[in-house]
Length: 92
Image (cartoon, rainbow, N blue to C red; front, top):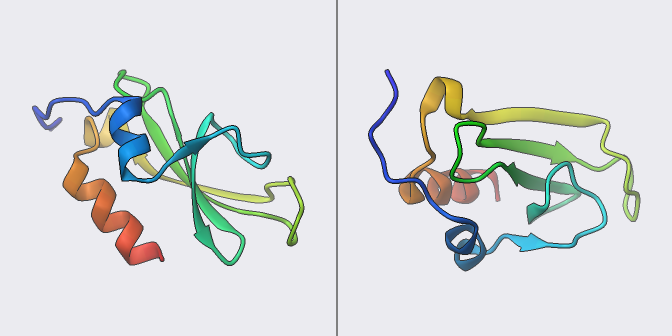
């Protein structure tokens, strides 16, 4: 059952620490988790919202050989600020 949560905006993601314009990414907004891992968020605030946990091929590389979907609107509804902050805390 989809949650009836107010959708976060790109501005909300940026306030949490996501950045745009990083070289290695799947989507426009990413959050560096360190050790070659990062979160990549796309279609924020829409019914296509997804967040992937990604790993770079090697340090300094822009190749993403591993990406795992950890949030998908179709299954989870909009991501809440609390869930996003807990994911970041757990993965850092």
